[in-house]
Image (cartoon, rainbow, N blue to C red; front, side):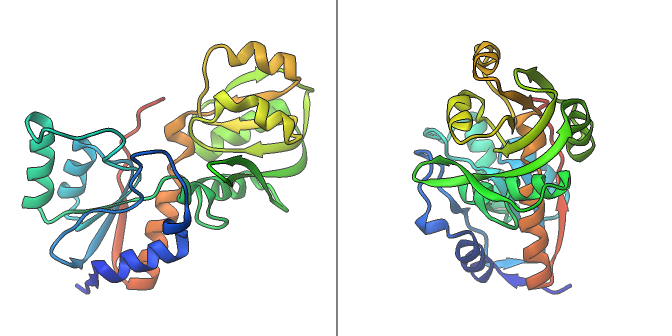
Length: 253
């Protein structure tokens, strides 16, 4: 079975995702988070890096785990208990971890937002939703009923959306930001969309959406962010001639 250089894969991912030039949340640590011995024969892709998904990657005989949510959002010390179990598992099984958060959200082809827009058939995408000094989402002009859009979202993601029907029955300007952007409805509204698709949001956003006249679809943080890691793993597989597998470990959140 052919194998590829971990270093070459990392250089390629960092380049196409513009990893080094992206601001992100503190602790996101985009890029290679854990090394292996240097060779990759199989890639596993998952939304989250955790002990559970690392075990799935080991069972799949992967050498590299590609994730959207990495290992280091908060300090992971001391290396005892479950932290030790995770570290031991990664090292003993020669499993590298590469994480891409906002860079993978924002990518115009491989990103979560671009991929979800494509799955919904949205065309002529324009940059939308600025955070950390860059836009990460997309918006599109369309004409689709709120009910029909809900059906299309469930088809694309496999998750039934929660709907805040704050706007008109017909959606005409749709903004997409996957993940946990529900707390920023005002930003979405200011940018002119009448319909906002994201993963999740707080309880108080229901009243705010009504006040803003905004339709909001909460489709699930996990469900909206399976797209990017699949697309990135597929891109690496194509370029470096290695196999890949998606590890589905849904949170239903």
